[in-house]
Image (tube, rainbow, N blue to C red; front, side):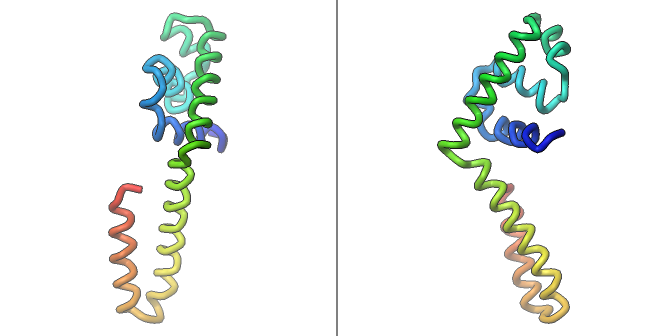
Length: 115
């Protein structure tokens, strides 16, 4: 899946409940279930073009929400910071075991926040 596809899928996870049920369903089938426009059209009983239009409108709504709220971006930023902490822990562990244990506990608590 392309990076853009992963980005829309992430935005769908964050903001999907704001979309109409129909748009959320069609967009989910396309991005999460990796169905083609034709397959979705057959399942949903609308034209391929109708599916494409609904997905494009959903994408625009999701991107606008992210631009205004920035929740998914902040989530990705926090995940990156946690990964950086974990890398540092591995290098510190060899030098100072007690400090490393404290930092590992902090990192574990952060990761358990379901970020």
